[in-house]
View 1 (tube, rainbow, N blue to C red):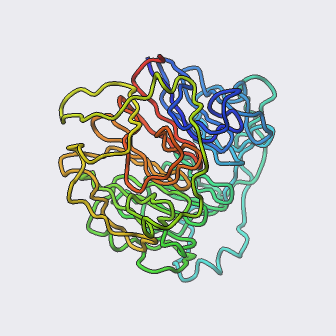
View 2 (tube, helix red, strand yellow):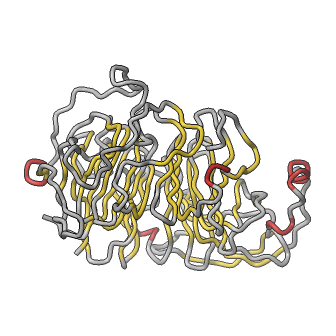
View 3 (tube, rainbow, N blue to C red):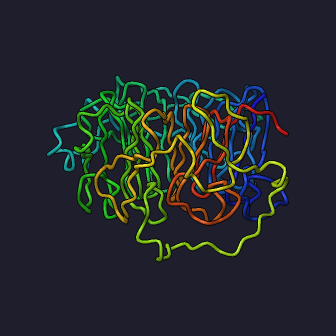
Length: 425
């Protein structure tokens, strides 16, 4: 049996109905034997089971109901957009019903980079081709063939992944081509992962190189200076290091290497990079407000943090309410405590001991999540809405353990979701 726990903003009942507006403790949302995925939007939480996708939160036109998202599809959600990748690789967007997203050209058609801007302004000649149009006139997704114009006569597209914000969408095709705004991004390498922030984009090539573009005024491009770039730039500080995974917050980035090292850069306004911000005496932009925990069953579920010996089985579903990490042997006692406001180049996060492995990373708008090999989930950064799951709303400038027995972690702007191996209490 698996469980979905969530914390953070609850003003739209995205965690529990008729609950407080702030859920500062990990709270059960669902439990089933076959939960595998979750997605977090501003007003909704989606999770996937063998019977399709379920969701919580207020009903809105930009969010499909459960009946409309049955079947083998992948859901991606931002504050005001929902996009899906269907089982045949089609890319769909929800606008009162499922509609296809169309693309203009393939990467093979691109001119060299210095001619790309001028060439994008020219219209391509296109050829009618049969594609699939999707509607939701019944309780399951229905398909019908229509004549329309495709992006290229001899190029059929199949997508595997999407990175989504309200003002940006990156779509990754199964052959490693990235599309943005309906056209291929001029990358001269195949891509295996995409991510987006509020003002910047990020890709990971199949060779383990990281590329960024967009606004870099908060250091989020990782190029060593606070500047913008309309074209993808390789993050040179990471060259020679094989990166296996990437994540984007609103204005900060993470990259994880094959050796489980984590590199961070960008804005550290709330300590989301895992280093102290400004000074201990200064206040961050979003200060904590007076908060009293009203989470259901918090006294039963929240237990003090205890030392976990490496190699020992950890207790499942136990929340660590204390923030004092001084006695935890997993933490590097010689870690950097350098104050970071804006980090314009990737910086190694040396918070954990060398024998502790990070297996996955996730970013909310201003908070960051880490899942360790021992099944413990850690969180750092902004906590105004309880998104760190620590039982309070104070920010944290160093990662704090939240739950154990965790299989996956997922982050939204102001929310966090934990998929655990423990049953619902």
